[in-house]
Amino acid sequence: MTATLVSVVVPCYDEEPVLTPTHAALARALSVIEGAAFEIVYVNDGSRDRTLEVLRELQRADARVRVVSLSRNFGHQLAVSAGIEHAAGACVVVIDADLQDPPEVIPEMFALWREGYHVVYGVRAEREGETAFKTWTARLFYRLINRLSHVEMPLDAGDFRLMDRRVVEVLLSMPERDRYLRGMVSWIGFRQIAVVYRRAARRAGRSKYPLAKMVRFAADGLLSFSLTPLRLAIWTGFAAILIAFAGILWAVLLRLFTNDWVKGWASLFTAVSFLGGVQLVTLGIIGEYIGRIYAEVKRRPLYVVAERLGFDSRRDARDAARAEATDAARLEIGSPDEKAVEGATAGEATVGADAMR
Ligand code: UDP
Ligand code: MG
Image (cartoon, rainbow, N blue to C red; front, side):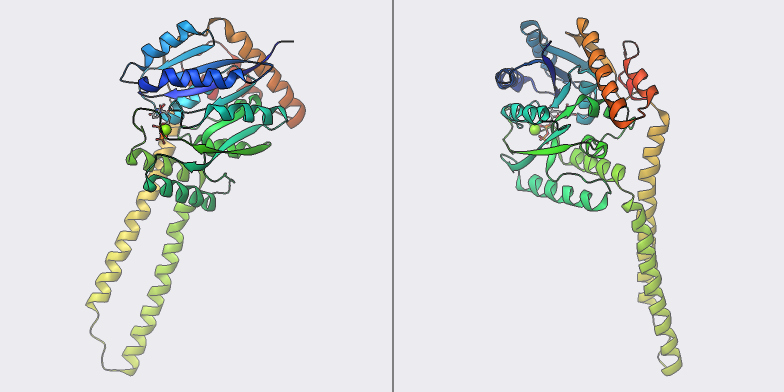
């Protein structure tokens, strides 16, 4: 019997200074696991530094290294999606390139997978080397999205996780453009379990998530997993109506029982400008959703691959893993989407989204 293949997906954007130590750490951590073979799929997400050259060297030195190089910077979530799409393993681990997620946790994840869990996600007990601002806004965000969304999402879990092939196949069949992967994996379900770890400080280089990107990422998460922002408009409307009724009642009472009823410019002005503001915000929220619908409707590929390294002989491995996963899915969940599965195995895809239709 052949050893189980484990894929590790590593998105890299301008990670030149960390890649060599990262690869060494990954290789060391993975060598602890018995009865498994590995591949490490590095995704170069349009880096502007020498990341691709370093990856080429790693690939020359180690046959377990695969490199997918995207045609430009597509962003973290899409880089991860590209890596997952190219992974052949019976289970797939996603880990950051900067060693903030400790590779030593992977054997623990693997053991839980062997026990029968389909998703093992890392939960950050502590974050080192990050500003109090980032830690707190992140904590707040995970609590907020959990309240606003019907999908139960683990608190303080990032994208560091192990997924069974079956979960991976479902993930690949989900076609959305705004990929909030941690939410999507929660949505998929199956048996999921947490492992707690300490998030270390970045080994070298700078964070590629400045505030603006973090806000956009949070908005993606909220808007693709919740309709609450849209409903906010309804509740604000009701509140405004209630206040208006109180105002009318007050005006009538003044008119009936006092001589003091001509004033009121200030209250009129306040009410009009407040409602104007509420209407603009509401339009903005609706606009956000419509913009997303527009992006979905265009059905562009999720990402474009410029170059692949180290992949030649392994279509068979991926197809076998997929076939096995589909068989298992057929047995256990009844009617899988045949189309999605066929799409997933058909032809060498130059454009990644082929399988995600
Ligand atoms: N990353 C990427 N594309 C991007 C931004 C980030 O592939 O556009 C990768 C990055 O190389 C790293 C991971 O995503 O491996 C997480 O990014 P980073 O460490 O900068 O985020 P932080 O940990 O600061 O939130
Ligand atoms: Mg990081």
